[in-house]
Length: 422
Image (cartoon, rainbow, N blue to C red; front, side, top):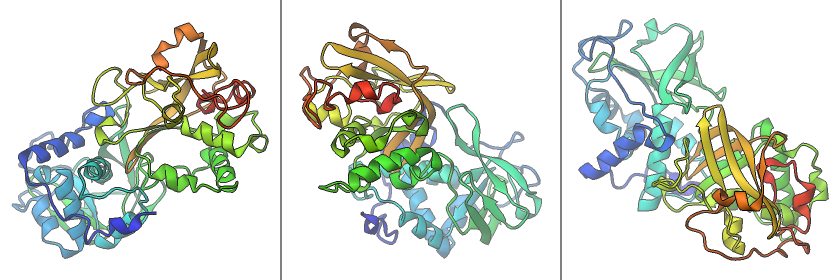
C-alpha cells in the first residue's frame, strides 16, 4: 500500500505554472478522455445575474472564496493542480460543494495506487482522476441552502450516454451521492461572482463510476465471483498479494461480473491458471492519455485500441483485446479464445458498465457471453494490437495442454465471457 504518498499536506509541492499545463488540465475537464464534452456554463440569462434565485451581485469569485477558507486549503490545492482554477476565477453560475480538509484527507487515505503529484507520470493520472471527482461536486444551477429543496440534482459530471451524474439533497442538511454515501453541508457558504454558490461539505461525494482504489471498485455484490478468484490466488502458495499488485499497475481493465461465471466452479480451477486468466484482463499503460474510455477510438492516439494485456506481453501471445462502442447500450470487447494456434476464435463479450475511473486505471465491466458471437481465426485479426510482435504463446504456463497457458481450460470455460482463456 502507498497511502502515505497521499498525505495532502505534502501532496502538491508544485502547482501548475505554465499556460500549456493549464490548457492541458482544462482539456481534461471537458471530457476528452471519455468521448464527450461537458463544461461549466452560465445560466440561460447569462453570467451577470443568478439562477434559481441565486447569489446575484457578488464580486468574489468562487476560487477567491475557496482560497480564503483555511479549511478548504486541500481542495484549493487540488483545484490548482487540475486546472479548474481558471474556470472558478471567472463568473460561475452553478453550485459547487467543496469537501473540507478532513474529508479530503480521509479520501486520500483510501487511495492505494502508487502515484504522486511530483512525477510527470503520476501527475497526469491524478489530474484526470481528481478532475472527475471535483466535477461531480458541481451541481447545475445556482442554489443557496434555503432555495435547494430535497430531491435529485444533475451535476456537471456527465456519463457516456450524455446524461449527468446526480446527487440527492436529503430532507435534512446533507447530500447523498450515487454510492449511497452521505455528506453534511456544514461550514462556510457564499454567493459568488456569476450568480453561483459555494458550500462546504464534510465528505467527498462519490459517483457510481469513480473509486479511490481497485479494491473498492470490486466491493459490490456483482463482483463477488471475481473476488473469490482473487482470494483463491492470494490464499495459494506462494500467496501473491494480487489485489495490491493489480492496484500498482496503471492501465485499462476488463472486469467480469458474476454473469460471466455462470456454470463455472472456481474451486475446480487451479490458482496458477486463474492468475494467468486475470492477467489477460489488464492492458498496462504508463501514461494517462493511453487509458481507454468510451467511445474506444480505434487506431488513433491517444488511446491504444486494440491493447495488449499483461498475459500476452509475458508469453509473447500476439493477440489482445479490442474495445468496441456502437452506442452506450451496445459496447463489447473482442478477445481470442480456444486452442492455440489453429483453433483460436475471436469472441465478442458485452460490456454492461463502462468508464469506471480509478486513480491510475480505467475499467469496464463485462457480463455473460451466452449471446456472444464467435469468428474463426482468419476473421479475428482485429484482436491483434498494431504494436504487438509476432510470436507464439507459451502453452505450458499454468498447465500442460495445448490451450494457451491453460491445459485445456479454454474449452471448459467456453461460456465465461471476457474471463475466458485467450
